[in-house]
Image 1 (tube, rainbow, N blue to C red):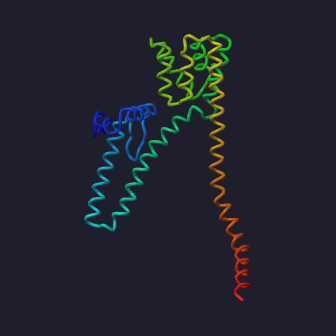
Image 2 (image 1 turned 60 degrees about the vertical axis):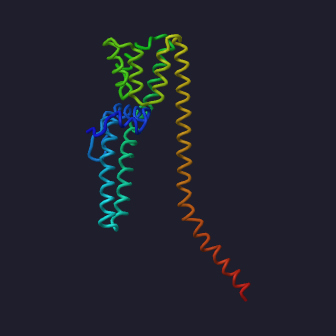
Image 3 (image 1 turned 30 degrees about the vertical axis):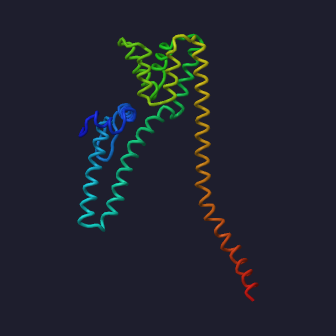
Length: 247
């Protein structure tokens, strides 16, 4: 469903935003938003425009005919558009994180490091991964190998795989792997540095989540401990103090 032309959408959103969203949706394959399966940025913005147009028409009609229903309808419209955005964002985020699930990407990068350290060519390491590993990374590398076997340059097939993965870590890994001026040992050292960066990012992410959790826990503690303390200890003291001066 494309109600709007890509050229029109790009003028409204900007080329960069449209391209990024289109790349994300096509990498995922499809995103279910409400009752529609969205397969491109053009479909996403067309569907959003349809829902927004219908919502505005409904709001205007209610404002004229029954103003009492205007506020509930407005809240419903805002909520509906927020749900649409969350559906899109959540699907893309889960897709991006899948390579980090079960330590999958770091394990594959360690395989590359081990192979490069003993002088194995990148393509041979990829074939080893396809034959001996499981998971999303194996499928991505397998697809890159299929394209290379069909005549595409290995570096180009890896770049396409990196773009489709939506993983900033795998994209960095591919940039390292396709360097033709580096020795195998040099590539291995750079991948090891990338692995250290990944681990550092994961530690920082866990620390940030722990900080948020501490703040969330602090609210029940405040309600459950300090407020009763004020009621049962401080308040009687204030009353007694007031009685002394009130005599």
